Structure formats: C-alpha cells, structure tokens
Image (cartoon, rainbow, N blue to C red; front, side):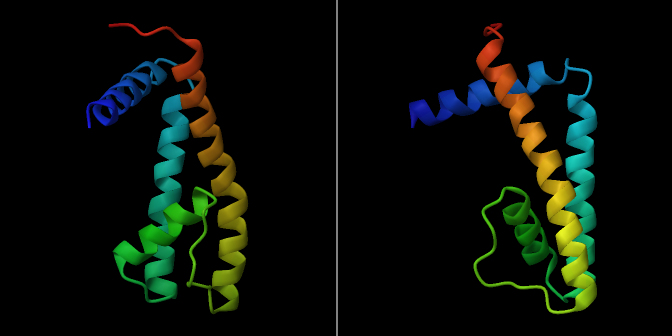
Length: 109
C-alpha cells in the first residue's frame, strides 16, 4: 500500500511539473475535449449511458479496446475511425510528455 501511494505521489508531482511545459496544457485540454465529444456522440448516436460512453472512449484512446461494444451505424463507424486516428495520437503524445517529465527531470521536493 505504501508503494502504491508513493507511485501516485510521484505521478502527481510529474503532472504538476509537466504543466510548465508549454504544450502540455494544450494537449491535456485537447484530450479532455476529445473524451467529452466522444462521450456525447456515443451517448446520443448509440444510446449508451454516459458512463458506458466514457468507458468506451477511454478504452479506445488508451488502445485497450472495448471487448463487446461495436458501433452499429455507418455514422458511428466513420466517427470511430476518425476518433481513433486523432484521439490515440493526442493521448499517446500526452502520455509520452508525462513520461518524459517523470524520467528526465529530477524530483523537486
């Protein structure tokens, strides 16, 4: 349990340091905007609950994938292709930037 708390402490310190990188805030905003827009789209177009739509969006952008949900309409399939292409790039760039901050910059306590 202590190591779990230590890891989260280091992660939150890294996020705080990452805000000093000029493009990190923009990436974070775009990732949140992508999640919100995907959640709204899937909840209205596919009649998913807000939680299910958000869960699908997060599993899609983190490249895990949803085990059972498949878009059913043509519009949903086209949106999902664009969503994966754009969203995964944004999400992975955000994770790479945060990883860079955690690995390259020394701890500032």
